[in-house]
Image (cartoon, helix red, strand yellow):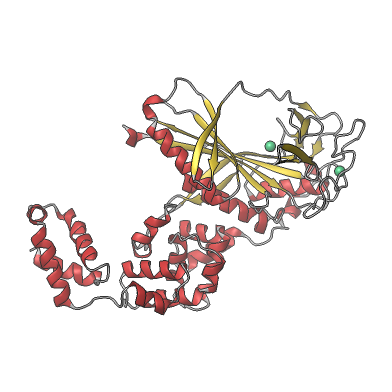
Length: 490
Ligand code: ZN
Ligand code: MN
């Protein structure tokens, strides 16, 4: 029953725009390192009688982002007031966009064959060889809209007191809302990485650092069965790294599936939190009434005629084109899906470039960087030469794929190639008689499987190979195993 459960994820992403001034006033939009409440004015403090003026650059950049995300730009857009009370929101309403945003629809394409986020799993088996020739494609994640609003201030809680810093109040904030098209936590991670690349490197409107809060993500996740029975919709708010978004979603997904029999009737909503230190999720609150924000058109700002902007010119201002990079990576032999992952993930791309400088095996390097999920970081880029050595050794069949996985893991943890090779256990076993003996032993210990195999259950071949690999600690040459095993099973 539980095998038929489907996961549905939607994301809501807020991106701070790196404009020179704030959204509706002339305050400096860069308050990094400045004293609390020092970059403020009557407008962003929400003083009575102050009047907002729209930042043209922010409007242009929002449409620029929308164009990169394949959105339509309606002719008319307007701002609305969204009312709610919170101590970091001085006006008691946020200027946002309700029914006439700058960008509608659109989509972003991601790899549909995303590798598991479980890094232990990727250590175990060779993804490099398995994934060779895989025919993965791109899928479209549809967007609902992209709109522009202003950010709120920040609350700082310390020693039982709560303090407010309004430097951030009035920062231009783009909100990007997806349709519920995402089917796994890994896809959510893939989507976010690509979106970050687009806003930071393609349209260049934000530094988009999640750690610094330039890019913030809320996620909705639910699970349903084939008969329309559905779990509560769980909302996860403000998670500050891609890894944590994936981890939190993975945990919630598992819990919802476990609780299948206890799902409440009707569509219920819950807010859950994520504790990154313990890697745990927990219920924060069941959803009260749907919030009523009493939206109405902002009376102090006129609607905006977007036809006054030269969209073609805006399009011409793009930085590096992700699509062009994808084509370039397809040319070296990567599938479109793999090329997309490489072009969408800055760390992986930098690692690819660094290893490529030390190896001419471009395709193999690309496959490795795309499919191995070691939480690649700066240190890996420094060890590019070592990875290149491992890739060459693998290409020359000096190490088995299992050994390759163990060695690259060890390089990732800081060792050199030579030291890893020593540590992980020497060169590959290619001695046919030694491998033959191991095979004999494995077959002797598994008579039932041997009988079944001989009666036609040929899928058991994988089982035998696994046992032999285990007995030789992954060092036996797979080609020789294959050859000998088939001879001996005749
Ligand atoms: Zn201001
Ligand atoms: Mn918002």
